[in-house]
Each structure stands twice: as structure tokens, then as C-alpha cells.
Image (cartoon, rainbow over all chains, first blue to last red; front, top):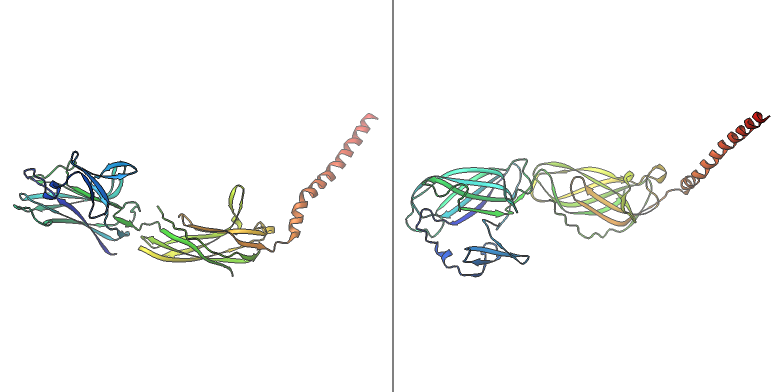
Length: 200
Length: 159
């Protein structure tokens, strides 16, 4: 089986900082923007400090889940490597937990099907980096019983010493919807048509 | 969830005689995580006021092997079915649609009015239509002697 990779960007995070926003967020003013990754039109409201998308005449706040910029096809036995990267500025932190999850994102939240954790350290960084300076990854082995709708993925980081955030309250999470094309046990058949029929 | 894209079919109607075997060829694309076998079925159907009805006695089936593929792969399959005569509990003369499907999936394709069936002899139909009348006559034949016998017994009692 083959190794597939999926990369997630947690963007800039502020760990144990003085509360100043990263420069790219500080420049945001109310209005419509175009997501450079997905091309979707999104609205930013500085009052709630959230982005919204317009669907069916209703403004829906964008959460940590985002449309996947690409889809990775996986089948049972394949190994899926999920890599995160982000910009970090702050003191050295040991024992940060990386929480990697595959599952189904729905109206009532994320139904976690496969969960794995990693532990990694953050180096001491005194000046904001221009590009992501920390990365971590986990490699899933796709099980035989994977559901064909387990196509969403998210990652969060928390904990460490000193702690960056609690497991349930961490703001450092990011995910992609419909990131995977699952080839499960049941076949997925398309373009089914009668080519010919004749007597024999 | 399966996504099925049915392309418009341009199958020409063909004429068959009862007893003949019909071979249907299908094409499709598939994705599956493990090597698997699926069952392909095909058969004629007729349409009336209550919808479409498969002629189940004429449905044929075949197994298709699908090799594991995580990206869309081309698949083909063939399945045969026999147009069993009406006298043997099969199909009547007429025009039928053709339906093909893969069991336990929603892969299905069909087209109306492409199978024209002939060759059923009228003898069988005449016998079938006359059967109720023959049975009626047989019942009358059994009841009349019984009635006569009962009448004779009544006369004996009166004397």
C-alpha cells in the first residue's frame, strides 16, 4: 500500500505572548474577503472577530473546519501522513500534545473515529518567524473497517510545560472537510451504463 | 453514499424469441478498498399503471471481480438471462424494458421498450383462457348427478 500525505496549516499561534495579534489579522477591516486557499467569498466582522460565509441567505460563522484544498484517496492498508505546521514565537515548551483525528464533521460537531496523539517540543523563539517554524506529523494506517464518510480531519495542540492551552479549550485547532476520498470495503460505483445487449 | 451518473442511453430495440439467451454488457467506474466480488443482475421489465415490474423468472446474474483501487478504475461486466416462455411461467409476447443493476449498491441502469419478445404459441393462451370454462363444466358434471341422486332419495322417503 502507498503512503499519502496531507498537510494542515495551523497558521500563526501566540503562545505566552503579550496578547498582540499577528500582523495579518490586525489589518482586517469589516468586509468581504476571498479565501486564498479555497476561493470562497467570506465576510469578516471585527465585532465578533469572526469570518462568516453566506449560505441560503444566512451568515454562518466559519469554525475551525475549512474546505479542503485537495482530496487524498486512501484505502484500507494505506498509510496517511498528516503534517501540521505553524509559526511559533515564545519560550521553549516541552511535551506539547498533538491530537490528530479522522472522522465525520456534522451539524452536532465532529464525530471522532480515529484518534492518535503525538508529543513534541517547541523551541525558544524570540522574534516572529516569517514562515512556519514548527511542524509535527502522525501517520495513520487506514483500517479495513473505515467508513466511506470518514473523510474529515482535524488537528489540535494543547498541554506542555508550561502549558499552551487545555485539551478542551485550546484555540489551536484546524481542520479540513472532505479531505479524503475513502475507498472502503463496499464499492463506490459511478457512470454505470448498459454498453450493449444481444442474443447469444 | 454512492454517486451514480446515468448517461443517456441510445439502445436500439431488438427482437427476441422466447427461449433465447440475452447477453448484456455494462461499463462503469468504481473505487473499492479491497478485492471484492459483486453480483450483476439483468432482466426485462414491463410498465403498467402501477409502475415498473420486473419479470423475475427471466432475471439472470453473474459475478464480477473488482480489484482494489483507491482511484476511479474502469470496470465492465456481462450477464446473461434467458427469455423463458410464458407456458413455462416466463415472459409473454410484447415489448419490455431492460434493467441492469449491481446488488447491494445503487448502481442501476434501465431503458424502456428495447426488448421485443415473440414466439409464445397461442395454443397455450387458448388453453389458459378456456380453463375456467372447463372447470365450470366439470363442476356442473359433478353436481348434476349428485342432485339427481338426492332427488331419488327424497322420492323414496315420500313413498
